[in-house]
Amino acid sequence: MENSTFYKQLIFISAPTAVAVYFIHQIPALQEHLSLGWISLGFFIGLSVFMFLVGKRAAASENKNNFTNAFLIFLMLKLFLCASLMIGYLKIFEPETKLFILPFFSLYIIYTIFEVFFLIKLGKTQNKAKEVMTS
Image (tube, rainbow, N blue to C red; front, side, top):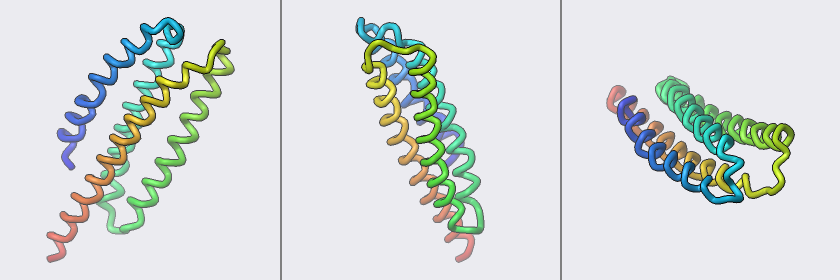
């Protein structure tokens, strides 16, 4: 997968998601959590870029296990960072309702699907390139 393709797809996902974050937080029960929505969006975009760059490097590695290891590390890192973000938000802002978690998990699902999609595609394109080079 080319860098330009990844960034185009990231923009294609992130632009409507940003609009959705804005409109979802117009709901009265969620208005006070708009900052969490923007922080979460930035977090997931940044994490996706990081995962792409590291995943691309791991997929190009001679060791076939590097890509799988990177994928598993991403999974654990993402879970840890998301839990830390939510715990930090709870401790700092002490929200009255638990509804703030719904937009966060919506973003989590959107970007997890996107990340799995591009990592699978990245792994397949890198394997095809290796097969062509060894043939």
